[in-house]
Length: 206
Image (cartoon, rainbow, N blue to C red; front, side):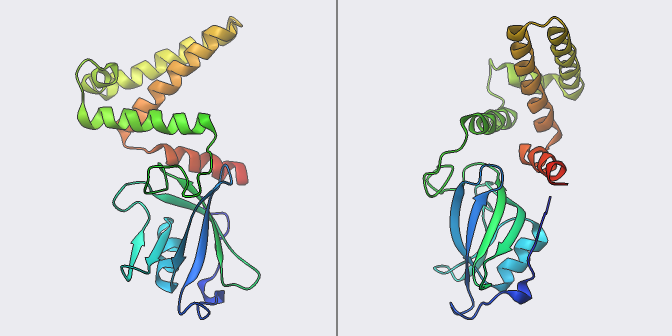
């Protein structure tokens, strides 16, 4: 997942009394997500764990973005500016970044398709956790892993048939069914959508 990581030894922490600003952007959309501060320890932890970790100036402590909300920022690349006193960090956001619930602290817009896929995946995770009655997703989780995997296979076959029949409408419908059931299978297996996106990104950048 990591394309480029800087050496903390090259960074100049002296200008701001041991801190450096870090600008976080979405590695897929390039939207600015947030700005925070890092000290040497939080930068080391960011590089080692692959999750954006800041130093809180108000609480005087290290904190990893998402440690309470679950909305982690998974690092793909870290760059420094020409003076080595500011960081640009590319990351894949897991959920919304801003504490207000917005995708970005700067009101940046995320591509609607990506936003909805995140929302759909989060909804399926919620169904798995709460198991509400009268929900098809709940029914699948109750039927178990084998049934979920079977449904993925069935939808994959139906998608292939729709493609062979050259019906765009049917192909769109069957592809939608396939993606939904794939999401259910990933949630059942405990694999976050960000892991898939990160893997695709890694392949793309090779």
